[in-house]
Length: 388
Ligand code: FA5
Ligand code: MG
Image (cartoon, rainbow, N blue to C red):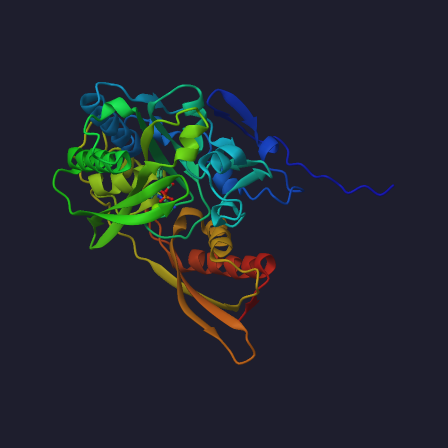
């Protein structure tokens, strides 16, 4: 009988995540239509930047630990080596993400198989830690998302989750609604953290929505002439506490974007730098040194290339960005939609401007032309678009 050939990748590498060795072919299988983890992402698993004391991500993590240790008498337990490979139940169901929520799509999340994802947030660990009896904790780790490309977005980044359960006795002013009380306590905690890290900065609270908290907020900090979102937080939905029998309790939770906070603290202009092994970057930071301001090594010139095509119904910007990132890696600085129109026949055209720039050297014309021509080929081959 004719059998469909199953091609698995050979084991060319293995990564060690929280003591579990994961062979490359356990994760990436090209006959699995739900596996959308490219090699560029796979190679980041197990890097553990947050556990390097001399790396800006490790330094900021330690500074946040200090804040919680000194303000909460070390009540917050710390977890930082939980595996980033989690079930869809952990990543979504346990935190009440609705079945039709966009974050579940292959367009937004990296799937290893239909039931397994690279966690897209550290909130994936809330429920299991509550079930195990933990009540106040910090979870730090690498998280993965298909996303746009610019100086503040990267497909792999680091979050720190904070979770704090209160019992009714924690508040004696019974006249205050406990949800309001928790929200106030949460904001005070995070404002205090911002002051601990940055001293005086301009910041503002923005109301938002998360499936797992209500009310929900984001904190933005004014950085490089713009508001930068650095964290999401809120008062935990009762449904999550109930799973662990905490019906009579109230809790707050937050998720910090560690790259974003480190960009503000150290004045780091581009998120790609966190992955640089260039000594001119790494040598500028030291264990426990919070006062460092990053000195850019001379700024290399950007190179702009535009690409226009007629899109099809299945086109998404995240897919386009993944193709560009797959070819140019960290040489792509930004992908920006600069023109978008629909003609009389109903065909829609997009024009994207790709900014190529290395953080470490000048790119040659030839090199950039080469990258751009590969982008044109791949986009046509993979995305079902018609180049103009
Ligand atoms: C969350 O991930 C929620 N889980 C946070 C949360 C936890 C809310 C607990 C309530 C309770 P959000 O998608 O907004 O939320 O991401 C949180 C932070 O991660 C953002 O504020 C931002 O600082 C950072 N972040 C998000 N996407 C990226 C990215 N592509 N690159 C770098 N940092 C990012
Ligand atoms: Mg957000």
